[in-house]
Image 1 (cartoon, helix red, strand yellow):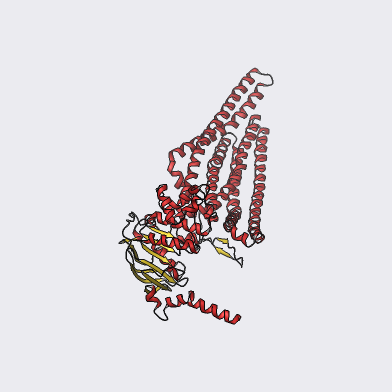
Image 2: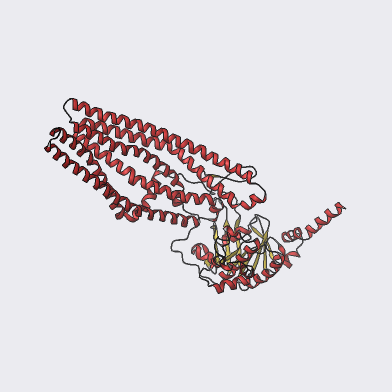
Amino acid sequence: MLLYCQPFIGRDRSRVCEDSVMLKNVTYKDIGRFSWHYWKRRKKFGAAIVALMAAATVTDAFIPIFTGRIIDAMVAGGAGSEQGLDAALKYLAIFAGLGLLFNLLRWSAIALWAKFAVKILYEILTEATRKVMRFSADWHANAFAGGTVRKITRGMWAFDTFEDTLFMGIFPALMIMSGMTAMLIALLPVVGVFTAFMAIMYTTVSVWLAVKVAAPLFRDSAAKDTEVGATLADIMTGIATVKSFGSEKREDRLFERVATDWRSKSIKAWLTSEHINLLRGLLRLVMMVGMVGLTVWMWRNGQASPGDIALSLTSFFIIGGYMRDIGMHIANLQRSISDMEDVVEFWLREDEVKDAPGAPAFVRGAGEIVFDRVAFTYKGQKNALFEDLDLRIAPGEKIALVGHSGSGKSTFVKLLQRLYDVSGGEIRIDGQNIALVQQETLRRAVALVPQEPILFHRSLADNIAYGRPEANMGAIIDAAKKAYAHDFIAALPEDYGTLVGERGVKLSGGERQRVAIARAILSDARVLILDEATSSLDSISEHYIQRALEKLMDGKTTITIAHRLSTIQNADRILVFDKGRIVEEGTHRELIRRGGSHYRRLHDVQSGGMIKAYTELAGAAE
């Protein structure tokens, strides 16, 4: 297995491994299966293109024969001979016709190939993106977005190189070498056998050097290339933090170190490739000298004509040209295979969370939630977070989740959204086991307002309507008004058509939060999850939006992850989590009255405990 690591910008400059998982080694068989997966969709079209290219190559193989015939006709007729001239012109016409036919056939094959190849690239790009979007939340949490993008696009273009190399390079080269070798064996046996030996040796050496020597180097270079992309994306994503701390020079040094690693790996790979090309060139030189020398020797012994010398020389130029390119093609093929490995790994990967065969769409109901003996363990951890968790949340009930960090609050709502699969028991919403319904329809029925909302670099209208894209502008504006976002949106030059920038960077934190709340309002889901949805707002906005949220929550089952206990005092029920267990539950008043309870201690830290600490510090200062 290949453990793939990416740079982590941290105090210790350590490295963190991408993908909570190890990437499997992609084999040549996997590359072949991946290629056939796309090629077989247009088998007849592809076969027609291959037939055209084969016809063009066969035509090219016959050209040297008529080069020799022209020379022999001129020698036989003597200088100024009309008969010799007529024969030479006849062979010249055939020579020209073959050349014209070769070009027409090759052009037709390449023109059709362009259409064939672009359609496949489109499918690879869209299908890889579609599949990666459906990978688990755990996978995305451990992957660099920039690195993922680079893997998909690099893999797509690498496949373009891969199939171009096979179709327009290696396939005709093998055909011309085998075809012309057979022709030479028939016409000039000694030269033909020597040519066959050199062609086989050249191809064998080229393949061995490409696979055993060049391939590992270019694989390392590709890995460093992804690391460069991931590091650059990480820096650009956090550019506001970089500037706020004046850390441009520090990031320069970090990126320079990563780029230097890529440079050294790439230089080594490319120089090795050039050394291999030099060796190939020397082998071709040996082949040319041998072919022509053997023909001259045969001519001296009366076994070959001057035209045969021209035939050998022309044959070498054609075979040598293809051989020169086959060395380059094998190098390109291996390089493209190295660059394709990531996108092929995406194609091979079976995600941990997937729909059951024939899963029906989730049917929205009143919003009842049941956790029935639920067990869950994070991948790579020995101890279960949840064991036999039983809980029923009535339709329309307002639930708050509190507890220390790592107690299970966030995992609880992630399981509810089926971002992870439970390892035991089941979760039901409105009587439907969420593991047996379509994930996308389930998640559309659960609205989420996160603590740090992420917006797309699209218009404000598009962002608000993200959970309900068919909504009209009237509904979008109404939702914005309820979230107290309409006034600041209307003040913008392009109001609801304003682009918000990457991740909503053009808006303030409070504005982003209000847009996220408007998005949840518009989705009109029966189950609502609030991850401290007012935490980024100023006190005045929080007051109004709290009122808007109260209206939004009316009649909906609401789960609030609470970081500030002051925001959940009106909850119907508060669940106190500790190490994956619900250790207490009740209303705010019931829990606050229990002396020594977990909830009381949390409350004291945020209120009385903090006041007491402040008083002690003030007394010490005096």
